Length: 118
Ligand SMILES: [Cu+2]
Image (cartoon, rainbow, N blue to C red; front, side, top):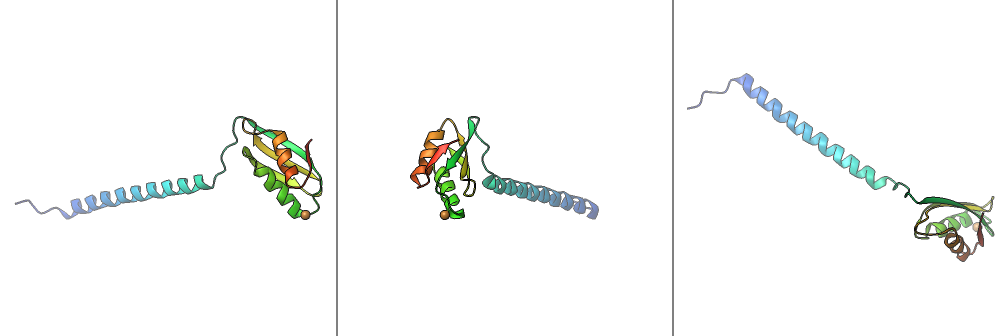
């Protein structure tokens, strides 16, 4: 027959179990947070990142700028674009290994806003 466990030993063992649980819970929370964070993060620019500016005709309001931006971003290899109707300008960040300034200008032009690289 085993001797009864001393109350102090039992408390110590429970304490270790709770600490282990706590460590696991924290590790899980950190893992989840890192996961969610990665989902939201924008991918880093590729090594062949390039930028281009365009003169764009025909933009008369903010929704024209939205359309120009969407046209530029629709080109595979473009990972960011901006357009300003007042300035008649657009800018694109793109992967030079995947697309060209000419292709982006053509896509903006095809959307109805004649564009030329600056
Ligand atoms: Cu407009």
